[in-house]
Length: 77
Image 1 (tube, rainbow, N blue to C red):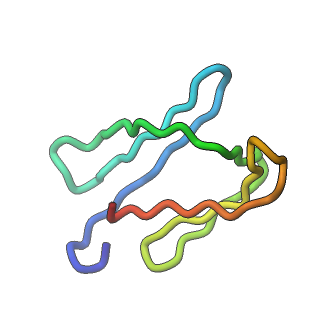
Image 2: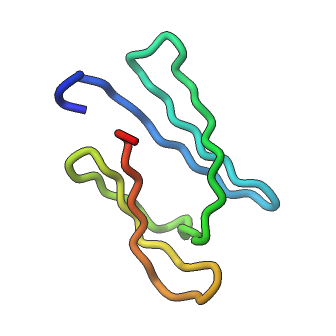
């Protein structure tokens, strides 16, 4: 976040049967926040993400149809 000079890291791990989504705020006294997310998609281990204007994007596969989709994570919300 350029306006507050905040640095955040999103970690998501998928290991059957659970998924872990955690945000680490590097400028906060309480740096770890676990998110309650049940995604309808999967990111392959070899897919790298990109960031643009504070959002992170990944190419993923929809769980229900196996079609490719673009997943966006907005760090501001």
